[in-house]
Length: 396
Image (cartoon, rainbow, N blue to C red; front, top):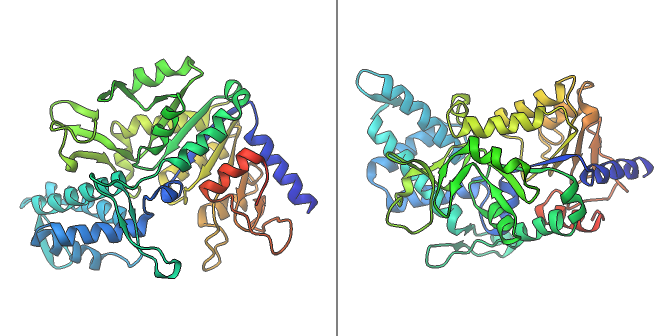
């Protein structure tokens, strides 16, 4: 009990420290806003392809699924298609094989773009999968009837920045996210915070990362937001380049041009703009010689490239980054939390700078949780639970 209290106090001090603070978010924070997690998203994309796409796209998707392992999801589909497109583009006959079947680069590209278009619509307007065990009926958002809610993000920003205005003035807070939705930047704006996401302009913005991020550095009311996997309102236009666009305009309206990349995309994609610039921002923040706390929520540590950037910072002799991961444990085949966090907690070189706030307690220097009692279960790994913890300082 005393050891738990000590670790809890350490986490509170890190969260309220006047030093630099960085947040890394993943899909889990948008679940309460009616944006699906990866496997329900995958099922919905598959159904959209089945209902709305041509016979060849349906065929390729079926063959692709059969070629991949059972635990693959839609981001793996996109990554695999990206690999096949690279092979097709290099080949003499402009085609690639999936199993025994050969498909042209044009056929593969059509499916890739159909998947991108489907993801954009789902994330933009929302989707809730049916769950009979929890008496949840399916909800499908649309342009005429969007169902996405901003309240969870709004309350989080209020707890983090508004209710602790003294902390806001004393610290530099930066946000990183792998999510495609716009809820985080919308919540910041609704709280009258200026958001720098690498674009300049108005409601329609143009990619201007070097200038935009530099100009925002001195403004205490401006927050850097790095969308590491792109966004549903980013469009790649042949003539205009990368543009942040309004919904529902005639121009910049092709949903297949949405600029998003899956987390499983090969490392080379992060070497191209805009992703090269976004990952440079992550690297600079993590490798700063200043004291820095990186807090994660909704992020499952499934992106090897992001994980490697964090680990490089933790292993650097001069680095002062501390990680706090709010995450639910996923025990399986000897894994306690997940493979990445388990390895960090067991590594003598970096384990002292890694805290995990899980459902079963606090992990620090060990994969054995510290809790108030053996029966304790905590909700701070959820986005709403984290918001409550920040607001009240009480664990529940």
